[in-house]
Length: 419
Image (cartoon, rainbow, N blue to C red; front, side, top):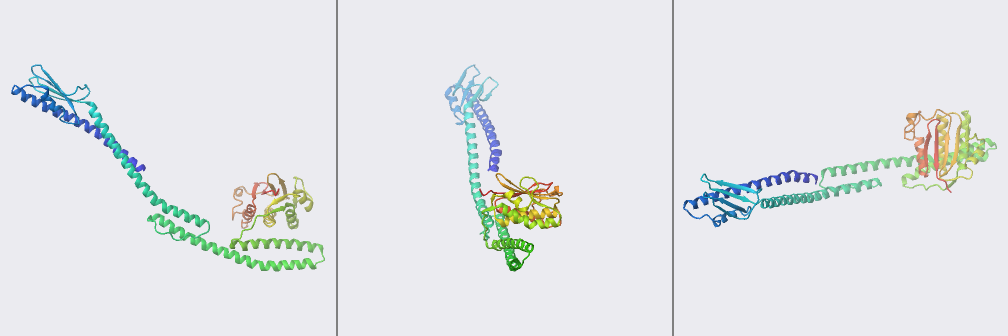
């Protein structure tokens, strides 16, 4: 449409201007020709001593219907003969004369010329409007021809996003669109094949892990049932809980390829999860000559049970025990491996229930501060998958995992309160 309008403007304006100038020249030529004709007719009449009257001149006033004119003849003897309507001095004038004093003046009305100019402009505008209308019709037809295959391509792309492999579309007549559609189909098939292979691998790996985990769980139950030493029983109980949690993770991996989604966690006592994590990680911190403290009020806490009860006693969150415990375990492990000093776990309750994990180590390097949750990004010789997986687990429970401060390193788990 822009091209059509530009073409019409570039052609229509010069055409209209040229038409106006041409009509003016035609009017001048017409009155001049009539002046010469009147001079010849009057000279012939005077040559035979005939009368020169308005009837002789009248036939020349309407000689050109487009330019009606008035005629004035000044005779050699001083007489004046006129014919036609009266006109003003700014009209189109044609004159002719002889040496003996005979002169002829033919005047065409400017209003007639103006009317002709208006007709010409209206004609040019009409042609321009017709050209724009034709261009609009062609543009709409061509637009529909291009839009239909693009809309079909968009629908196929949406189906690809929902997991369906689009079929090869029929030719649309637009080579570029057909090329994109075929490339989309090829990419969808390759993506589907890769996803199927990854799901099959996850399913096979999960299934292979279940057997040794079941055997390990049975051995731990046997140790727990036969031992008479309290310390061994406590360690066996903790190990059995870890194995059960790992079995739950494996079950999730086993069910995801089949399209089974885990339901959101219900109300969960936060103190139970914190006490469990303290019982599991406190020995490892002790071996590293460090301390793990559950500190509800920013003061150095004491025993595990008392601290956990004070930190989260009566606080219930909307989360599942397994994913939440796994996310907290990742934070505690990172603090043990990369941090230093005392690791504190604080619980704050407001609009969200916030569990903060901080230590007195060197903190997160500045260059990793904004990328610490990206996969394969790590400041040490590790896989860089722990924190991204922990964030995914918390997000799946409707919460958030954020890095509050780089130095000292402080991570916060935001959970929805159950009440």
